[in-house]
Image: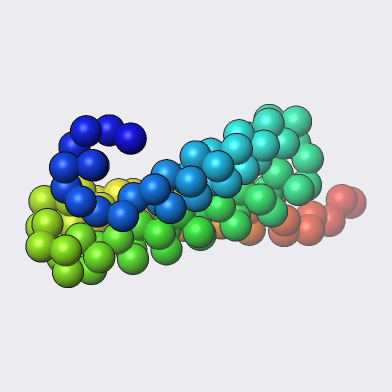
Length: 103
């Protein structure tokens, strides 16, 4: 565990376990499946984008309650970036799913 986390006295081991044990491998699998144009890659990527956006949004009040406004600002910027990427992903997905008529 990094020294700064240990000195802060915050319970971050669960966060590390979720991020490094679940989210990072799932993002890797989604990236590989998207690269190979597999349908489940789009499903997993969409779910992960929504999940990470919610995680970022929840981190804002959490940082404020813990009395750390600096991380709340950074988390807010990350939440906006996550939301922008998520909206862009789903808008692009909608365009690719529109049926076309061939004459």
